[in-house]
Image (cartoon, rainbow, N blue to C red):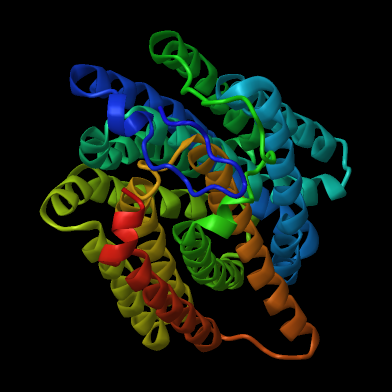
Length: 425
């Protein structure tokens, strides 16, 4: 592994994945273990996501969604800072384990606080569910990017998403089946229980393959922000993530607002939401197991990065002419399906040639902080416009989404250009 660069040095693009990454049968075992760990996280998240949203809307109404999403700026910034400190102190292995335990404890504590009638706990839970899952999943992907051989990563990234997606589908189906009989609040405990299953898979993973090398222990900032001054690819990546998350946020607000209008009953809404996300995750699994490996083996990453926003443009076009509920459901579903499969598999390949600080520190800034800050800023923008008496309709949301996807496409072109690919390999 090459020596880690200082704040004024260019990144040396020779890293463990390129020179000694796991391949062959060992790569299959590693992929299975990380996929099972991610699947347990996503299973718990699917039960938590809809439940936290339903509990929040019950207390604060759908008009509270934009400002609550805006408050995720605070939650994700705090969690990312804590992550950076823990990574410096504990290293990647124990940081992933510690943040997983922290997530479980927070979910259970939120359940207890809501049970005794503390209303602000619903806000805390809503903010936390927007932040913790990205932090855990991105750490798992940092491990994948740091250990798999690049050729194995190109072949296995899609199936890893697919196996993990089984957990997400399971969580959605359990939510859809049990929300009305057990009640929405009790779904939090099931979500925490599913997340507990992550820990034994992580233990097996680290016992067999160990933790990735951190190179020299000298630190240049807990989040490696200096890399953004030196590497254009990282700046383009964080801008790309911002554009995708503006799209995601607008479609999420549109869908959840329509859901509250058409299904105001909390438990019926939660059951519908669980089945909806299970369907999305099922569609994503098809692309993860079939579409991503096939397309990534036949086409360059550049083609995939252009294809995904083009498909989103088509879905947003449908949203302009369809009914509010189904138009927003289809557009949001297309975004999520592609985001969980083709986009994720192609995006992660961009990190593989980069050194430890880029894969573990700068990546978290991009895919956690950049992700949720963009989402929060978009939500705050909607809130501010609502305060000025601007009325948002499905057409308004679709129009904003079209602009965001157009920006996404414009960023994907230089990010995946030949000169940029050469800089990142």
